[in-house]
Length: 111
Image (cartoon, rainbow, N blue to C red; front, side, top):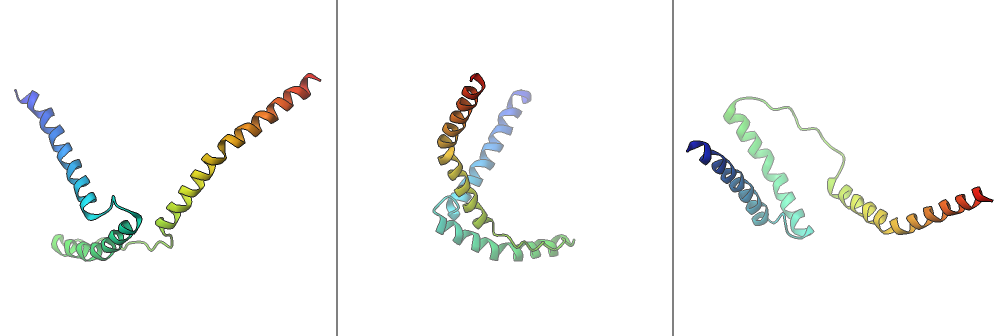
C-alpha cells in the first residue's frame, strides 16, 4: 500500500512546490511587464542582503563576500534578444544567398 502512495505523495509535493513558486512569482510581479519586473528586482536587491545577514547571525557561520560584477544582466538580455531576432530575420536571406552561391559553384564545375 505504501509503495503505491509514495509516488503520488512525491508528485503532489513537487506540484505544490512548483505551484507555490509560480504563485509567488506572479504575485510579486515577476511575470508582469518590464517596468514591473525592474521594480521587483530593485526591491529584491534591497531586501536580500539584510535577510542573508540575519541568517548568518542565526546559524553562526560566515559567508564569503559577494563578488562585484560590472555587468548588468538586464542590458545584456536585451542585446541578446536583439541579436537573436536579427539572426532569425536575416535567416531566409542568408539561406537564399548561400543557395545561389552553391548553384553558381555547381554551374562553374560543369563548365
